[in-house]
Image (cartoon, rainbow, N blue to C red):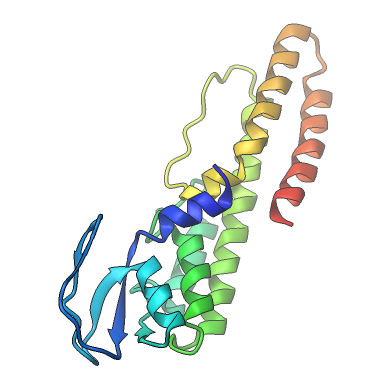
Length: 199
């Protein structure tokens, strides 16, 4: 799955808007939305909010978790936990990117929110990388459990998994004391691949 496909799924999440028009219920494949009353908040899928915003027919409201105080608390919690903490949405990053870009003139404190979201993303990516490397170094492990990963985070390591399994197979077949060397070799490959994914 490509990042654009993950974003497509994220567009189905609901967000509140304040429409600049009045209209009846709109029947979508995913279900009905509306009715729309000018200046009264209503929940719609993100893709529809982006479309209406592009036509200047609505104002986008921030998601409940898009608050600098809440986000800073998430940052501190993420720093303090060895495991991944639960995010307010399973499409946390792509929701933020879409809404903060389209609704930059609607959402208060947008720059600080964007910075906090990026900090959380960086923290969790570093933790994810460390988890994958630790998994490779632990020869006795046959599986790894990573709770609370978001869809975009899972997608970001998708290309790394074949390399991980290849290194583990090499370690198993060698049966020698070269584990450390091969693990270091994989760590270097992981750094390169991860940098390419983020660029």
